[in-house]
Image (cartoon, rainbow, N blue to C red; front, side, top):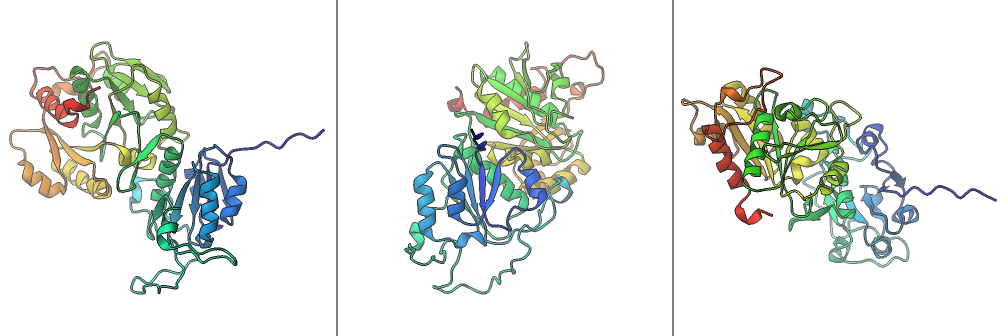
Length: 406
């Protein structure tokens, strides 16, 4: 009697021997079962019917005939197909992330942007047919690919795209009209709050924004996006184990602590976090997530949020750092800046926007009493009568219109 072979469902099948072999990339996909194969037929042999998965076609692996892709889509309708059109480049985030500064496809020649392929030249969306395979036209072939990744995409973005497409395959995401993937929580609005450096007030803004939303009648979740070093539990005086959830008796905010990542500065596991959030009763109307920019980017939270808020203070040094962070995050069309601790002699909004090159969505007046200085101090939430609280209330109502409630 033989012992049956243990079958491990493949989450990602990579049809390109050179695309994802580097250790750095495999570390970034930790927890995902990845299988390198040579052809689309090889991917079909490893995929499990009914198991959500992503097939990644690399520049070298995309020369399979469209007929193979058609068979894949017919046999595995729940599989997402991602096509990488050419060599990737080094990440642009520099020291803000720990992403490896390596090219994934070092052996492929650089493309000449001035050279346009002829009508008969094989390309990613015009694959060279195998002998006996029927050639499909461009429009038909495009229909077999869910997402094209252009030449020059960074390693970090490719990893993010794979996570997003896998979330979509698992039924935890949706696409907008442009084809961009966003994870969803049954209509829950998601707000991500971040800042260029500690001390700008991102934690205070996130906590008070969540409190304002709860006061307006929303079911609010407040997520600690950095469960290792974050201070949301300290601000609310709610010690919460990771993973865990606790409710603030005064505001009704439910503070959510995700599972700690394996590395101190690593991103939270968004799939596990969304499982945790989706199990909450009653379900959340709004989720406010406070996280450092590197964690927000590497986890994909920055891209899938309804609002991505960069908090800076009105001090020039803080604005300078915010300018750098805005430049890094500018590809997200959900981006807005919250200027904190604004004094009477602060810069006018239009000058701030010219400097930051971003929309300033709120200017919060300075409130010294919000600073935590003693371990027995009550939660650092603003009194409803203060100018800070009134501006937060206005801003919260602007972010979540009445028709989004419930």
